[in-house]
Length: 70
Image 1 (cartoon, rainbow, N blue to C red):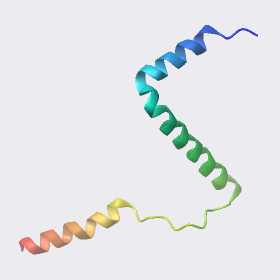
Image 2 (cartoon, rainbow, N blue to C red):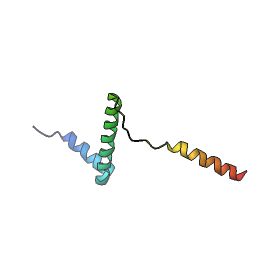
Image 3 (cartoon, rainbow, N blue to C red):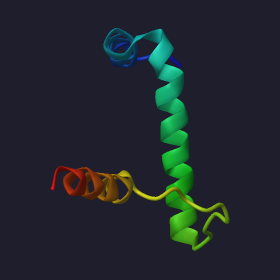
Image 4 (cartoon, one colour):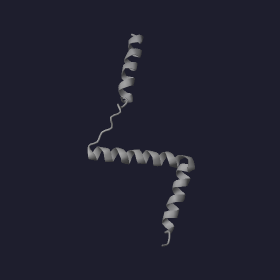
């Protein structure tokens, strides 16, 4: 079985764009995304509590800074 040249070109382009150090991080993120998708499709939800979104935590800080100005 012969290795198609287009796959080699794709691998070279990925290495140039992301560099060797970023590829493991990208693959880890891709794996977590696929795992989360599978859990969502099967109905299994992780039991660990999730952190609150950043928008909710920053909103009270903005109000308190506005109150200080008043």
